[in-house]
Length: 193
Image 1: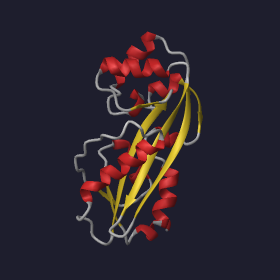
Image 2 (image 1 turned 180 degrees about the vertical axis):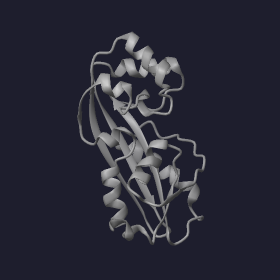
Image 3 (image 1 turned 45 degrees about the horizontal axis):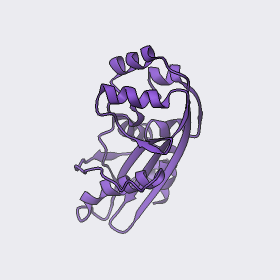
Image 4 (image 1 turned 90 degrees about the vertical axis):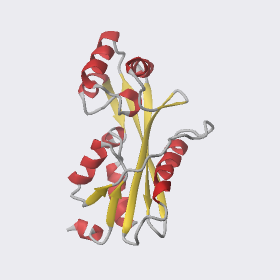
């Protein structure tokens, strides 16, 4: 079994995201979850993957000095990049509306970075997916926000939900990356790490 290569590694996922946790379960990878709070502040001069790379590494920082030799820490971050601006998780319903309205009728990028950290090394990789959204009515936007509470999702939407069914016209790249984790790249990188 391929995952025997991972049996000697103690994989720690530092993410409260139910989607990231499910991805690792679906890969049949044994892991534990450890969360340490981090203030996600970055230099506004950073652009696109520079932001997610920085934040993925930042989330690993509180674990320095606490890892054992067999530990591999997995941290990750996802943003929506649209018209030269990073869109994170919405702060409230109005902010969610504003974000979704700004994506309506346009194509944006979803960028995820993953940072693998051990006692000996650190490796960061990223993935980009282009997502094209149809013109959305205010009624559709309000319905989605009210019924699906997209407040834990970058860009205020989940592609795997109702929004993805009715709004996404085309994607170029990994579907799972849009859900917040480039699982295909992660699997390759964790085997080689």
